[in-house]
Length: 204
Ligand code: TYD
Image (cartoon, rainbow, N blue to C red; front, top):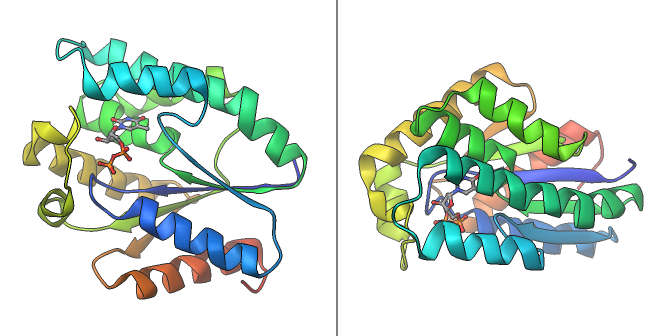
């Protein structure tokens, strides 16, 4: 696959979608073919699963939640990401498998390794090349949120476990780089572009 798959990650309200869109604009201005996607969602199947996961069914058990995220992701990988990456596109994703590692694996306590294994089975090699972790305090993120979904509504303790797992991942997984997400959008975008340039050894 000749494209690039870059995921933006962080606690709820970290600013991923704003930063991902702004980074995409900059990369497009430099002449690259860039597509943005979000998880869960981006395919018809994925958007239907998103509705179950985030806006209904308060009684979802942790493994049902984890497997639904993985199912939406498998659909996205096969239907959308693989063809784009094979065609040489740059894909910028608002969340990825790393959200499942942090939220379901770490914060829900299912285990990062087993959640990674289950997801890898559905992804057949479609895996982010670079993960940009927007590091913000969970309190700051929750305060920024206008509409909280089912998982965001669970509150601070969950987000703190999510943040701790992201930090462990950024220390142990060379694909994950951390960017200070507390500043203004322009500086977070600039720091993200710098990481992308360094990782792919190009000027962006
Ligand atoms: P998102 O739409 O990115 O919301 P926000 O802008 O609030 O971060 O994500 C929706 C929620 O789903 C968010 O609480 C994180 C959660 N999530 C998981 O728990 N596991 C996953 O694998 C993914 C993709 C998201």
